[in-house]
Image 1 (tube, rainbow, N blue to C red):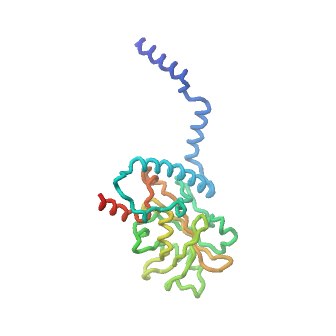
Image 2 (image 1 turned 60 degrees about the horizontal axis):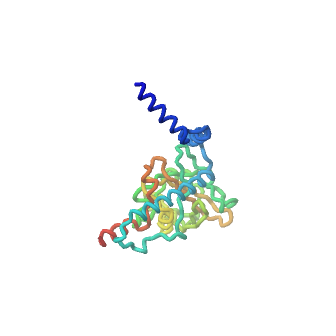
Length: 257
């Protein structure tokens, strides 16, 4: 017993001499990080934090992928997203108490947002991201209560209304706001496909916040869509981003093998 105590004491002294014990600064840093779990970030801070996080995760992911790739499998160059076309998912947050702002936080639209609907959030489903359908379905009750009242008499959602949809950085996407098949309200057209491909959105993982507003200059109906990562996503899901044509790429790879 005494021998075991002496061995433990010697190990502790050795660890201390090697500087392996935590300092006061280490404890302060740990407490600061722990407190961040319960912090409530404003929109700008959440966006900045997400961009930094995805930049670091992207670098790690790229390195791991390069090490694990089979050099014998030829890649389809048409499926590669070039750096200039990549858009990181903004507005993503790991905090459960996230509340979307009443007015969309798009700097490019400062002073240009007139009457605006309440924000609507939904977790993306497989049908939202299916290329052959190319539509984002909206909650019917929310649309009828908060969006339809913003329309003018000559704006017929049954026929479809051409709209400009903005992302968090102010990039424009042409879409159509329509009461699809007289069953559900959707945002559709190739513009939606371009949006979810460029932002690399995934079903069950990504959540989008949608606002409809009237543009002060053009007086046209517009939308803003900002994606954020679900706080319930697993770590592996947080790191994996589906490339455009990902399913097609997998099939091509299998054929070449």
